[in-house]
Image (cartoon, rainbow, N blue to C red; front, side, top):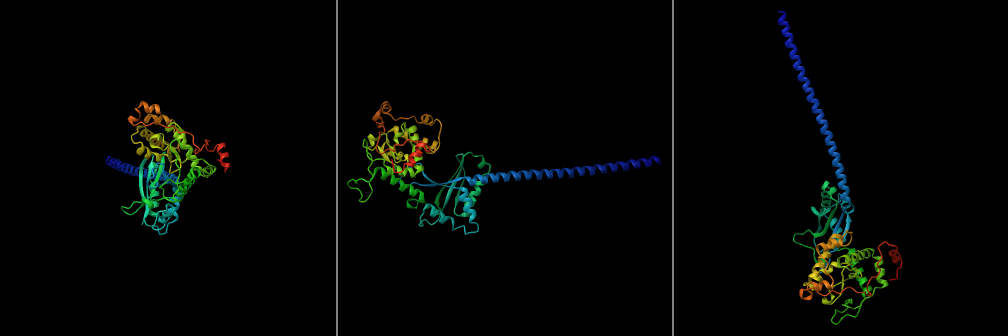
Length: 403
C-alpha cells in the first residue's frame, strides 16, 4: 500500500508540472505577441512620421516650383527663345485652388486665363495642358479645366514624393489650350499676355529710335511704317539718346543683349556679329544682299535659322553655324547659364567654319561655300560694352538723356 500512494503522488506531480509548462508557454506567447504588436505600432508610427516629413517636404518643394506658361510666337515668326510667363505654384495653384473652395469651380479659372492670356470669347472653352520634367525626363502629364482639376494637378506633383525631392532639376511646363475636341488655338486665338504685347511695342519703339521712319519705296503700302534696312556695305541707322533711354528702362533687354553678344563671340568667333539688340549680321551678306538682319525680338538671333535655311541652303558652313547656335542655346538656355569650356564643346561636334581661308580650302563657291563678310562698325551699333551691375553700368543708367 505505501508503494501505491507513492506512485499516485508522482503521477500528480508530473501532471501539475506539465500544466505549469503549458501556462508558461502561453504566457510567453502572449508576451511575445504584445511585444510584436508594440514593435509593429512603433514601426508604423515611424513610417507615418517619415511619410509626414516626406509629404511636407514634397508639398514645400511643389509650392516653390515655377510654372512656365509657354506663349507661342506670332505666325510666320521663327524664334527658339520663346516668350514665357512664369508663375509660382504657391501663388497660382495653392492660393487659386484653395481660396476658391466652395465656389462654383467651373466658372472661375477660365475667365482668369482669358484675361491673363487674352484668349478671345470665340474659343468656347479653354484650359491648361502641362507636364512635369524631373532631370529632363517627363514624369507627369496633366490637364486642367477648373479649380478642382488645378488642385488635383498640384497634388499629383506632390505625390511624386521622393522622385520630386531627389531630382536636381524640376520643370513644370504649361500652355493654354482649347478643351474642345479637335480645336486648336491658332492665329488671333493664340494666347498672349499684356507683357508680351508691351515688349513688342517697346521693340518697335527701339527700332524707330535707331532707324527712324524713312521715305517708303515705290509701291509700298500707303501709311505703313518703313524701316530702312542696312544693305551690304552701307551705314544706315544711328544709335540715339532715345534708344539708350529705352534700353535703360528695359533691364532685361540689356542683360539679354550682353549675354547674347558673349554667346555670339563663342558661336561665331566675333561678338560684333550682334552689334545692337535688334540686329544680327549675316556672314554671307555678299550672297543674300543684306548684312544687317532685323530681329523680331530683343536679341532673338535664332530667327536667322530660317534665313540660313532658305537663302543659304547650299552653303554647308551655314548648316554648321545653325547647328552651333542650336547647341549653344540648348546648353546655356539662350545665354542665361554659364557653361565651362563652351567653345570646346561646340568645336567637338561642329567645328567653326567662318573665314574666307576655310571657304577656299573647302572648295569655295563651286562646293557651296560662300564668301564671308566680317562685321564692320556702324553708326547704329550699341557701343557700350560694360559688365551688367558694374560701376560703368550704374553711371550709364544715371545718364538719362544721353547716348
